[in-house]
Image 1 (cartoon, rainbow, N blue to C red):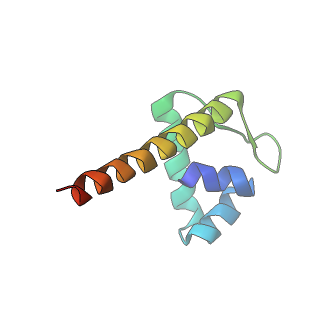
Image 2 (cartoon, one colour):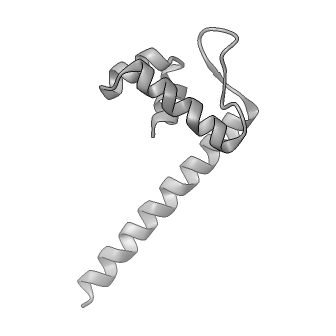
Length: 83
């Protein structure tokens, strides 16, 4: 997830480089996501970027969704192998 890479690198520019996308595209994605959520995920008042409390909550749930998706994929494989 883009937000995870930004959080890890603490930089939109570095995250964009690592993911092979342009910095303006990644910035636009983040602004749209924050607008859709109605919260700021990163404190941009200082460099390096820091997650806001809302950003920390987003990351927590993102990790939870990833774990659920992995469980779902395991369940699908199990169901397919039993047929």
